[in-house]
Length: 293
Ligand SMILES: NC(=O)c1ccc[n+]([C@@H]2O[C@H](COP(=O)([O-])OP(=O)(O)OC[C@H]3O[C@@H](n4cnc5c(N)ncnc54)[C@H](OP(=O)(O)O)[C@@H]3O)[C@@H](O)[C@H]2O)c1
Image 1 (cartoon, protein in one colour):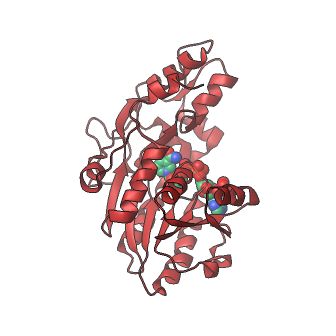
Image 2 (cartoon, protein in one colour):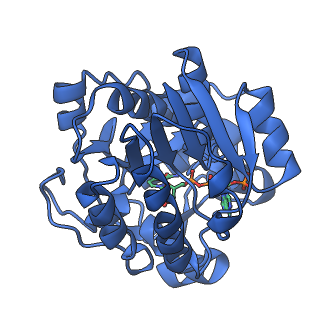
């Protein structure tokens, strides 16, 4: 398939680009800078230069495509308006294609809010972190669109042993005397390795029915204190106890969206396993942290 990806250099997008190329798909990717364009070309993609905030400038340059994978987001306060304008520009473009493309939209586990003891499934009503509430009407629009076959993926928190949602821990391990944890050590994070979330996108691209949604959680929920302690052990930080910081403190440092780090959640990836045959292979993040070079 010819696939157009937005956000192909991100935590979610870069392993997807790798997985698509490995599967023999033709990848076209949006890049807003020369540095991102170079990374994408190196990975085997054809680049369209452009910014999601100004879609009118590049949508006309898109070739006929079979699918779009949207994983771009700048995490600034304008992200709701930017995403709405992006869909306003993209969807009519696809309506004019002879064959309806598939459109994989990225939601996220944080749209389900704190879950208590029962893992959220695709049927659980949304209770989004306020900074991401705008995603709900956007994904509803994609699922209901007549211009594309819409599919929504809700990734859990995406990690690599020293990247993605673990990058802050890896940085604290080197730069500070303790690893900082938001809220409490008992807060549970649903997790998925970047390579596993990429395999889910590829399966959904190739097999998911139109108007379906899938949660991409390989691990339903791991107490974040265990992850912080794994980093403290591996890097022998001066204080092995995590340092607890508040949601207000992380929001002041990174933006309102970062309050999601304090959510205590369980998410179920059972539907993707059952319906798409998804088999995540990274199920031991603490072991992967221990083996970091
Ligand atoms: N990471 C997670 O754990 C996770 C979990 C669930 C859902 N999500 C959702 O997934 C989406 C992507 O998250 P992420 O963690 O992969 O983000 P990320 O690592 O920050 O990557 C963002 C991507 O979007 C691109 N981008 C940002 N602003 C752009 C602009 N103005 N024009 C063009 N491209 C732009 C970036 O390109 P550059 O190379 O130019 O920076 C990068 O490729 C977000 O909506 C997020 O809420 C993430």
